[in-house]
Image 1 (cartoon, rainbow, N blue to C red):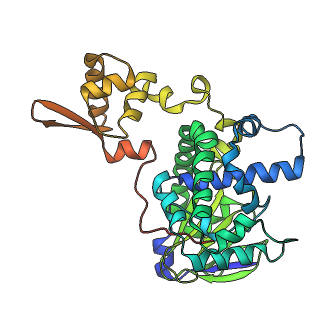
Image 2: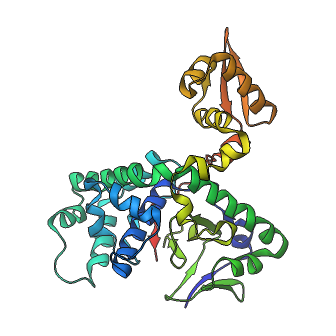
Image 3: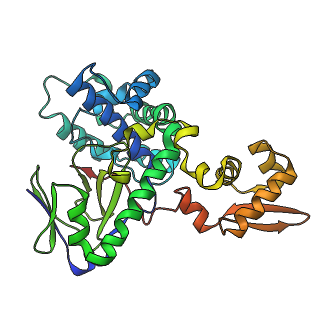
Length: 340
């Protein structure tokens, strides 16, 4: 039994992550691939797993050495930034002492010696670190990025469903709905299946629903309390696991396009980076007049704002628009932690 002790400050500061985390979802997608292969071999799999296996890049193979079919995994792979580049920088910046400690611990119950490149990684070799960063980057673009819009839909649907429970019943009611292995008891969260007792250092707990992960809840903690403990659990939009919904099929599963219309959804997505009207029109593939018309509708809905810059205008997302696209910034500095 693992237990997370909550002080009143921890209860007050427990919240959902403001956005999904690209590096974390990439690691979890890899773990799902590894775990399913180990448990089921070549039996019938969901469509996204079959497509992910076909798209798996050769440059991601180093992750096969680092990620076993089941946790725990090396702690330095815990990166919860809402931006891929920022998350990869967190991995890249892992101190040498941390690499050595975590990889030594990770390999102590595995047979044989680790591969040469892993031993070099434990010594802080920069080429080996870049090997890991490139593996995560390439796996993300091959497997995760094509499904990212659906990941965001699953993430926001999950948060929207749980928030009223948290507001009405507090942590006891909310944690009781997340997973059978979780329960609130005596001012703390208990998780069956592994051991340990952890304090939250007054920072509360961040809840991160994952669209890729289907296993038991995972906890990413730090001994020094430099960032909040993160609880990762499987998102279940509409009560169903999200895997088949992760297949990129715009005609069947693009909820944003169903809500706004395909062109208007494309305009909103194009404004992840601020653009002028001509640039927006070229990016989406419509006329400037059409881009201006769609921008007006989105502006009236408070999804974008438009500012004049000299004789031109510049469109950008509002906080509501960023929320819909899953782009709210993460709170605090979430450096690499410990996955259990």
